[in-house]
Amino acid sequence: MLGIIGGSGVYSIGKFMEEEVNTPYGFARVFVGKISGQECAFIPRHGTDHAHPPHKINYRANVWALDQIGVEGVLATYAVGIIHTYEPGDLVAAEDFMGFNAPITFYDSFKEGEKHIDFSEPYSKGMEARLFTAAKNVGIGLKNGGVVATTHGPRFETRAEIRALDKMGANLVSMTNAYEAALIHELEIPCAGLCIATNYACGVLEAALPKAGRRNADDRMKKKALSHNEVITMMGKKEKEINGIIREFARLSL
Image (cartoon, rainbow, N blue to C red; front, side, top):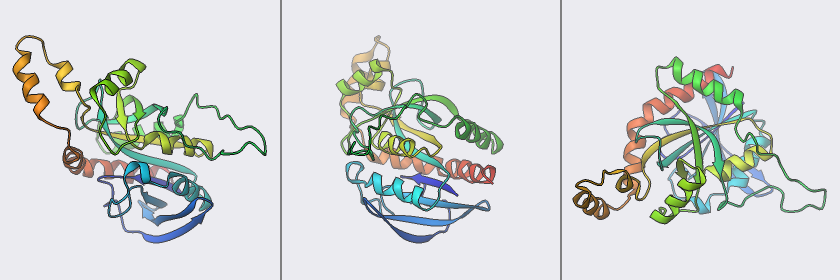
């Protein structure tokens, strides 16, 4: 069974039957059905009504539930902000992540032995290859090299925070990625991350503008506050492509 975790813009992927799965971390709402002939389990991370902000999502219950019902691989989608390298609308495969500000684990106790999990390859190479094949098969460009930093949310990051993440090597920023990626990898479930670059992170456009004649451009940019509407609008534009990749990915999983 393939597990799919999605947020903004992925709710229309198919018709599913809702199941409430009881886990040691609480109940998780899982939607089970078929995509391209493959049995799949879909979790809308923010809830079907998008009521759960990033810091209130029960990540442990969600991931545990997928493992509990027999999911053998996970494809997770993420709306992400751009630090550098990419442009709004780009689809990017996650290669690595930074989760300094997202401390979450299934190992809250070492009573049964120490657990320090290796994260040298947090995403499955096999799942990543399947993701690129799926995108190619449906004629959609997919870029590689996504290094996703995760911040707490629900607020957007400051200019200083984005500059710091840039210097540390991140090129994308999310409010959910590291939580799920860490937990999925702890349970040794192969995972691929499909990132949708929705907007430039705070201060990025300003820093990229040429110095010549930059003052007026800076003034305009500083007056334009980051908005979740940008994210929703871009996810709407990319919804058909995202769903096309997911359907082909599921078909390749048979």
